Image 1 (cartoon, helix red, strand yellow):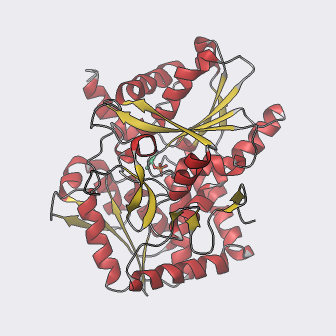
Image 2: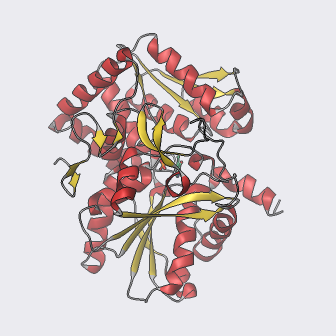
Length: 402
Ligand SMILES: *Cc1c(COP(=O)(O)O)cnc(C)c1O
């Protein structure tokens, strides 16, 4: 079923979500993206592809992920009832495996000989290396040397999983340089290689395709809430970096106006500082990485340096569909600071025994802030996009627990 909102296609044939999205890329790259789109359109509805993906979701990822009533937390807050969508329980510990499996399967169906990607903190790299090991396709991950030194556990995991890890030493040797390096490699042979983007960003068809693979999250939330209490939830809340776990959770509810949708951006040290990454809250419509979307940029149109305590959220752009949903007012975009996020991380750990990823803790922070203002009849679903094992040492150091 094709998607739309208020009669606007999500996206149209050129990959636009209203004024956002599209393909702002050189002609040879456009040809490669159009080939990927054609292949995706051809296989997405076939029983073979759907059966293979659904089988992996069930028996490899462990779907459906549970919907857990955080009763002790709800009672303590004394307001709305909080339910947690447990994407943290997925194989590899986060939602990213959902779209990495889709991308790896697509690569296999297209007969690609190599899957290429960049990674910052290593989360996308590990999920992709996992999916490629399973599907049996060589995987090449480009990572800045600075990040390689910082993210040792993920670096080792990618190597164990058989990925070819390319250390990028140019420039500042961080994420942006890794993107440049990975793209150069991709452009050497776009017919046989495929670039696997890690969120609902980049040129068409990636914002659409990654969303489609993640939409299983909201589809399950809907089934689970209807089975549990015979109705939609009142709120669905998710953190927004590029925006893939949020669109995954929102898609099933976009045209159900009784469900309020909330996206939580990282406010870092505060929205009045230059240490945040609240793109939809404070950015403006522009272009980045081959798409039109909200961007945090300076007066010269250069992307601003961004900050979040959660490395998976510090991106100066955001998915084009989110940019449209903001303009339409369908999703409320708000933010949580590093401090609120840390507090939520500890609260959920100590009250429910669930250690969330620092990214996910932004959505939990919103629920902790807002639930007390709402009646006990209100039901909030918080998407816990990943688990916090990767953040445990950092938080322990920060709070003097080790
Ligand atoms: C990467 C990541 C995110 C941010 O990506 P989105 O595309 O915004 O979902 C959020 N949570 C976790 C656990 C992540 O690993």
